[in-house]
Amino acid sequence: MDFLDAKESDLEAGRRALMGGGVGGDLRMVVDHGAGASLWDKAGKEYIDCTSQAWSLNIGYCHPKVVAAVGEQIKHFTHIRTSFDTVPKLLLAKRLSELGPGRLKKVSYSLTGSDANEGAMKLALRNRPGDLFVTLWDGYHGRTLSTLNASWPHPDNRFKAWSGPVLRVPQAYCYRCPFEMRYPECGLFCVRFAKRTIQKAASEPPVALMMEPIQGNGGMIDFPADYYPAVRAMCDELGMLLIWDEIQTGFGRVGDWFAANVYKTVPDILIIGKGLGGGFPIFGMLLRDDLAPFHPGDHSFTFAHFPVSMTAALATIEVIESEGLLERSRRLGAEMTRRLNAMKDKYELIGDVRGPGLMIGVELVRSKKTKEPAFEETHRFIDEGLKRGIIFGEAKYSKLGNVVKIKPPLVISEAQVDHVLTVFEEIVRDLSH
Image (cartoon, rainbow, N blue to C red):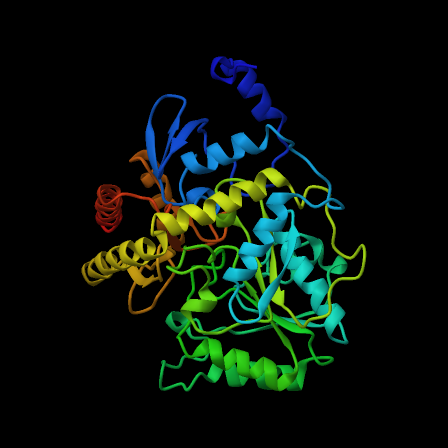
């Protein structure tokens, strides 16, 4: 089938046939091809993609080494079900166990990020009594029945009755501290409050605390460096497992293989995915080698051990190493953050700039003094970026967020970085008038 000659009438018929309900879908753009940090639509217009397609293309579009590895693999076989071993599956498990921080040396594969998080919850239930989980305000862990309820409160959540019990506690969102304190004078009061809430308000001892080291969907919220070991210590004291959802932060996005290395804190279970596959779907978890494993049938999916994706993942890891993309993420992220902070000093619209690495969030406000969220301005910002050839990300969905995300592929060039920041300031200036 020649997709290049597809009729516009057929494409429009397909668009009408889509049910909807997913995130996005309102961009009237048909993608033609991508390379590096850019994609082109069918009209030939180029866009620098600062979303890396849902933060997944850490090594960019169609990296030649991934394409070559996958092309060779599919000459042998495509799908092999989970009961059989394949060379890609075993080599990838070995490689991931080598990269895993601390005692995170066991590997389990999943099909999507949501069921990887759900798998972590299942494994925690196999290792602790009770049913209660603790999550953070503004956290996000997926859209299955269990993970939806473990995420920030979605409007019109019809599915709560089919979710397990979850206790949410405030996180260290220092720009908008729920206790109206200032760091570091607060002494991490949020951790003490979380501990007290769990002790006083939990219906039973919780199984685990599940968190993102940097909250992506909830607003690109990073925490003070000493927050992470304090949460680790709280979990140990209360007998809870600590689960880190690193689906967005892993594989170079924050300037290291994992945020666990950046913040020198090792969880009991670490969720992986997105940037691992070089554009191919692969997810799973790294877990402490002394945890009780799944029972047979607990967590198995027909395509979870997809050898094509595993081949792509092995090639992706090699690219990150051979091209020095961890260091590149740190260097370019620091430069972008420096220039964005300089803009923050000039414009009332920019309230806060957050990192690290190439996981950057810029919170837009109508007033630096009141910190009133600039929801409408943020949505207009995204639209203006698209018109000017830059795809920026937006926190949450349906105009519920006020954070612009800048998370390009780690292979973005210095010239492209400069262009992105030039356009960013142009839009801020226009929206400020």
